[in-house]
Image 1 (cartoon, rainbow, N blue to C red):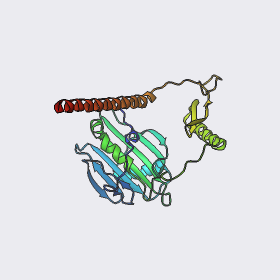
Image 2: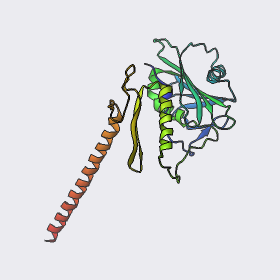
Image 3: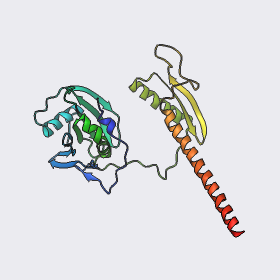
Image 4: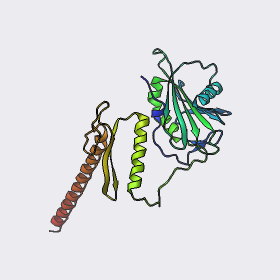
Length: 272
């Protein structure tokens, strides 16, 4: 079974009450139940089972993600010689840019996961890198994926401030802004090799634009438009959850009303 180290990064809020810092001041929430040790720029966490290690390496600078990972392995693990199996870029997130995930070859008999993530901080002088190294048995990684994921997603660059829209007034979707949004989507389609997208823009509870970009199917001329049908896939999950919540809410109100009626009837009978 292959595990994606980056996919373990769940969305969690970092509380200052339990935030700790790396050697260069990046903040993080430590993984629960793991023991920690540090030596210079290397911060290491070991799972209770002893066969899963997460290592954080602070780097003042690096040429690129590949160079950062090479430096990190040399600092953290002596004689690291595993062959690289796959290297994939990841989007900018939470103050980190130029993110890239590295997956290394392991034999089926080892039942190991060996991966790395390189991240460059967008704060400060923009030169600092952090590399996360993972060496873990598949069994322990399955068991400890939640605290590892919390740790990965909690890591923030020194000085990073999460953007807030509190107190800010949304700008109306003018034709010019709609064109900017469409251009943004089109650029994402190009980068991700997406042939077609259907979308709509809503402003003030009113649909101000609905249509599509690209083609319905590669190799065919039919374009995507406002009436193009797509597979619903997991979109139904949120809708089903909302409907269940409404049903539960309705049932609660019904039971409360019934309880009030029964209580009133009992009280009235006792008075008689």
